[in-house]
Image (cartoon, rainbow, N blue to C red; front, side, top):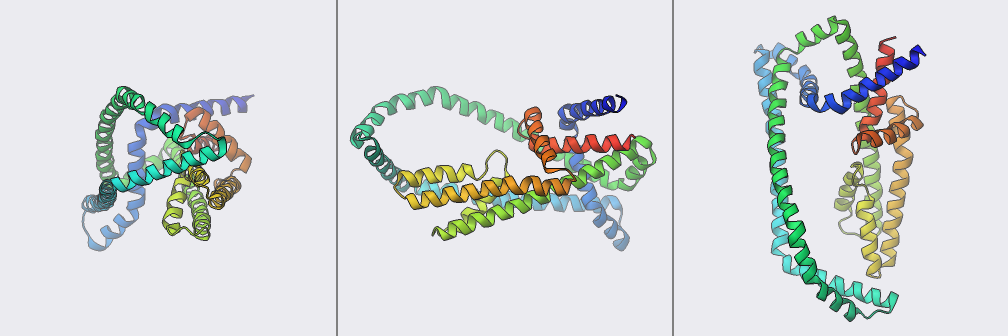
Length: 336
């Protein structure tokens, strides 16, 4: 009964910490991780070039910030170029959309017997009402979303500023902070727990990368065999989408297969369905096995912790669920 009460107490403490405390300390947690990552390089530079630690800390954080800013700049520049290309070819895309719509109506006529012209006329008659409804509901919602997006961007920039300053300050006194934590019983236990969580988190990321690479290879190979000239680009993009819990390969392949089916390209629709099925099965097989082995958890425990995490924490529960399990287990053993 004492052990059961102890596990329940630790579970409640971990849940409360992740639920309410984690959002408040995320910037400083990220700063500590960055400091841990940069500290070996700072020590080497400090020993070889004999400059103050604070100078090297500021320079390395500034260099990292510059590289990230450059990457974001080139990404936005490329995205703006693609948007410009879409706007310049808007008339062409409209004609292609019109031709696709006519093909869809013809396919519906073949399946149901309803004349394609009647379907097109019915849609044209209802289109003004749909546009008026969009003006009344969608546009105000988009405007409100724009304001919320702008507010979130300011908050995000503020968090980035806090992370940068905190990383420099932590790097400056990294040795002293680690020594102070290690010398205190509670700090020592916290370091051990964080070290285990950090190792598990790294293992989780590595496992997801392995799964993403395998899914990408399957997508590229399948698209290449189907004769798609953009097999490499599309396959890499779908592989990245599969790594995101709120997207997945089905977000791309299911609509794609439906479009090909409507156009009468049954072979391509079947190929895309087969690729989607193989990717789904591979993720279902590999995820519990790889992540379970890397985290030191049984595959069933991984699935249960992910499911419980999704039910409790929401979207990010797929990661917070296993993390909670690891924290509960590690704190229990540290306090025995």
